[in-house]
Amino acid sequence: MNKRAFIATIAELVPQGSRVLDLGCGDGDLLNYLQLHRGCDGYGVEIDDQNVLQCVRRGVQVLQLNLDEGLKMFEDSSFDVVLQIDTLQNLRNAETMVIETVRVGKIGIVAFPNFAHWPNRLSILRGAMPVTKRLPYQWYDTPNIRVGTFYDFELLAQKNKIKILDSFGVKDSHVMRAFPNLMAPTAVFKIEG
Image (cartoon, rainbow, N blue to C red; front, top):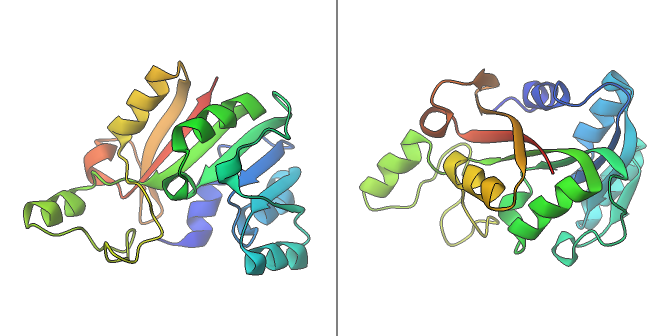
């Protein structure tokens, strides 16, 4: 997946001038893009020392926190947008963090690897866990502690009375709205509480 094109796709979901909290912000690339191209401000949250350093070098404000401990330090609706891009699958408390996303932000944008993408299904039918461009790890060395699908996320949102404002898949930097659960390796949801 072309990282720059994916960042631009996610950025289109963020209203101009938004106050943003980017959970699991990595090296700060997305938040930096939002600052430069969408007039946004806000904070990244990251646990990895090297990524925190990269954020600082980019001029991205970053808090070093463990997301598995929650977002108690933030008040309700303290941000316009809360991002969880490739973060949810690495968290032990995924359901809590989705709820916290829409509590802390007026809207949330969540993206994660879609385990129901057809090559993954084919791999499972063959008896092996998938190894793809989107899921490039063996089952024994993956940083992902959970896997999910479009349908799984829709059920989670329904259970917690979270409204899905928009959803689509992304494949090779292209937005896919037709059969995204089957055809797209990445699931993207725009949500509100």
